[in-house]
Length: 73
Image (cartoon, rainbow, N blue to C red; front, top):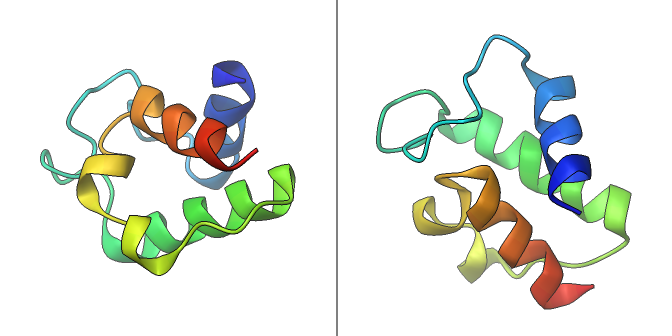
């Protein structure tokens, strides 16, 4: 699943270093990109991520995003 999440992220912006553990804290992902990633994850995995879960903590790394997706799959 992690590989698919990474593939989705790279499809949105392949210039970002998604190996980082500080994607948001490090300023690599802005709010627009965060929403794009969340939307693509929901579409790809046919899940609904509640608005309250779209937080920096859940999108600061690919591992955090994967854990979030796994929660709703």
